[in-house]
Image (cartoon, rainbow, N blue to C red; front, side, top):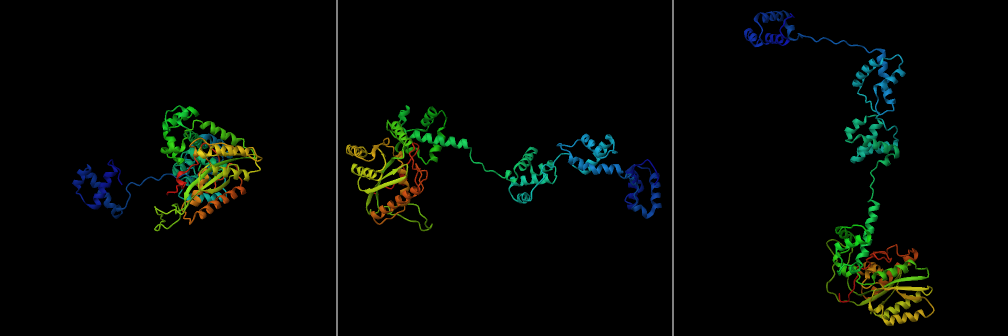
Length: 512
């Protein structure tokens, strides 16, 4: 091909036009700005080439020289991966690698030549200079579990398994970070946890609520229950019932801790307390509330083995008829109870709960008066004749503090046998009467959802319930009633924060 000063593009245009004959010589001359003699000269050369001109490469590229690697270069490439893996630093530097290289290859390259050859090799091999193989050993059991995590759909466990497995396989953590979308420190923490405690140290731990917070919350609940049992007048508030704002203010004055009114409302709801009932059910207007309460607590704290403390009350009167309640029934055949029924009779159960042994003494009557209380005290004196002293605690009903009853107790104390001492609860403080909780369990167990045929059958069920309860606590003695029997509302233990009374579960009223 003749040499000329026209460009390769123009030469190719002349050849293409010669092969296709799409333009005339004049039109081609004007298009590519080449004179006709020059075009004719190239056409003559194309005619001379003939058919070969169809496939001929007019401007072949010059071949690059291929240099075969020298023995010194092959030796360098062979030791570099081992040298990088053996370095203990986080990232291998060229000077540190060169020092190790000269020790392994005394007749190797000089530093500058090594640096250039290393740059070319590193770019071609794409080997990472970071010390990425953090995990050295994985047991067979761990491999099985890691494979399970890798195949599962738990993102956190998959990330754990990917980081541990790829690190063990020598994958650079930078590449792992792109795969699992985690930061470098987070992946290092996974590896550190695995090396410290194995896979069990990586499993998701469901920690409970903060123990300090839970303890503080329960303490606030107990203190609030103590407050609403007292009259607001005892704290200088001219109201007959508590408000949330007053409770919050008094709580801070007493305990030095702020409790928001909304938090107080939440605590009450969690305890199953409707605040609108507080002034009727949970507050005692007794001006000597604190003195009576402290007296009872003092007796219980010093109660000796030969002394007994009884919580006394009456259950009823209750009528014998079909009662509503919860039971397993078919959805399309619910159990129904008639609104108006003829009563089969009625009765009253008078009972005493001994707190240290959780034993119940009871009998049935048709009256609530002093004579029935005298009868109960005589039963207790006979049953606990071996004890030195009996404490009787009950509410402030009139027949619990009559002159006739006090005279009878005085006569008992003059005789040989256990002494009897009355420790009445504050007025309208049935919520502190522990036996109310036992009555609540009794109602749920044998009264709700019942349909006894007679008074005797109902009394037999109650007697059996108390007998089984007493037998349970004789076999499993629990002082102060740490074990709740059946569905009793609270533990059978005297506590000023208790709300033993459960109006929803006390079925009484002979007219119903």
